[in-house]
Length: 446
Image (cartoon, rainbow, N blue to C red; front, side, top):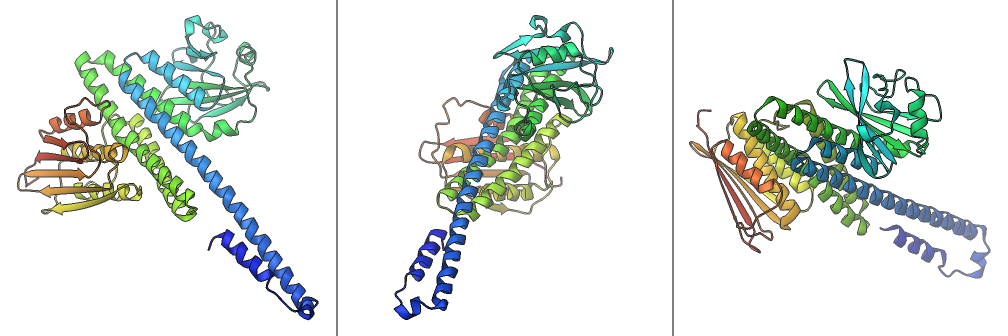
């Protein structure tokens, strides 16, 4: 029963006709007092419920904005060839996301034990170090964490500029404060165990609670910057063709992990929004919990990408079990009803093939959730004598297979199929859904 109906019922009880003698009795007055207390409690519960719904709505918007931000940054990484342009994009995006007033990007110079200014974001523009008026251009500051300097070696740190900052040259502090900056947040860019740089965010607020709340997003963006730096290093050590192939692989891995994970987050949050509009707080809470778990998995995938550039598929190593897990995750979004069918006796599949098969399935499911408006999906996995066949069919809007499509989705699926000598067929027409069939040669004795 809703709190509104409960209040109405109590009010009706309070105004039941009674005779005059009973109305003057202490028992009647006690009953009225009890009902008034119940009504007050119901009204308080109603107010608390409204506050909780509003808080969940704000949390949903924040998570959706962060998901869109990270996916946008990954798309930029996949398309931008110039490293400095991408690093400037990451710096600007991080500053804007934290609602700060500027920032800087630094690289370590271990030969001198100092940090070298590379980019400064000031007054809405990304400025290369040679064009900056920052005193550090001529006098690089020392490297180290608290209490040595403002360039930590491990996690992010904040610094209040109204106090003397140990290790920060006074001319640097004076320059930054002249810009109206009161607080610094420094986020290290770490690649595996190597410190590759820092992103420093400038804020004109003394209260650092909002910056701290957004620190996970800043860390993921810093991780993407570190990944881009590693890609630039590879370009200096290998032939151009090999570098381009590696870039495409990394872009696909990012697309197939973080982008798909955050799609699940957005779908769950949209489902929670629909539930909240119906005042079904319990169902909304379930969807928000699912979104939180997917977001945690996405963050772990980002960290794995930084620590290692080798493609991985987290979770069970059995292909059939992984498909069942994918179906379960899709079902929990509440946006589509997936069904899984296994034909033949499941068996172990070589890692190289298993990774590509599951990534193709993930990409297909992501496209269904994002674009198809499908209500049902059938995933069929067939273990034949010397072949593995994966079929994914939906009843969604469909599309013209001959048309050019933006993004890495369909292109990445074809490239993955080629790497394992598989045949990928995509049949789709507007209004008639889509069917994807992947046929993989695989010896039965493997």
